[in-house]
Length: 208
Image (cartoon, rainbow, N blue to C red; front, top):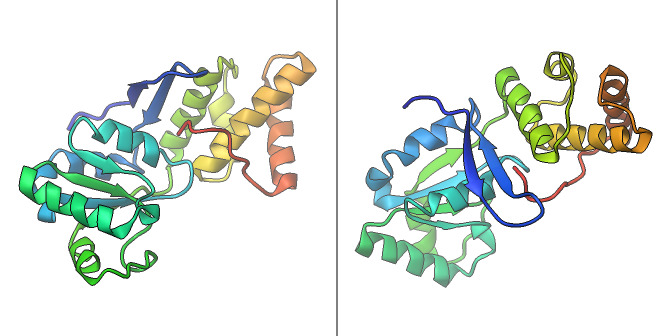
C-alpha cells in the first residue's frame, strides 16, 4: 500500500474538513482494512488512546463495511445481531472500543466468544514523523500559521500522545490570538510551559 499522508473526510460544521493523519500509529489498521473480507468472522475490534482518530476512522470505514463506535456502550443484543448480519451479508463489521475481553466486560456468553475470536487491532503512540504531521494538520484546520521550524522545536518537547498534540496546538492558537502576535517560538515555549504546569490535555472537540 502506498503510504498516504492523510485521509480527508468532508464533514459539515464549524470545521469544514476533517482529516486523519496516517502514520506509524494507524498504518497497521489501514493495512488490515484492505483485507477486511478475510477478517475472522468478518469482524475486527479497534482500540486506541484518546483523540487518536478512532471515531473518524469509523466514519471512513463506513464505505467498506459497518462500523459501530463506542461499542462497549451499545446493548449486547444489538452487537450480537450486528455480528450475525456480518456473517449473513458478507459485509465486514468494525467495532470501536476497549480491547476484548481484557477490559470489556461482556455478560452475554455467545457474544463474548464471538468477539473474542475477532481480529484485534490497535492504534499506537505516534512517532516523531507522525507527531510533526499531526501538529501541522491541527494548525491547518485552525488556520494557524506556526512559522518556520515549529515542528522541529515542538516535536522533541511535546508529550508523545494524540491528546497532548491537540491541546498544544489549541494553546498556541489561543495565546497567539490573545496576544495578537504571530505564533512563533516565544508563543510555542509558553504554550508548552502552560500545558506542563496544567498537567492535563483538555478535549478540543471531535477532530482527530
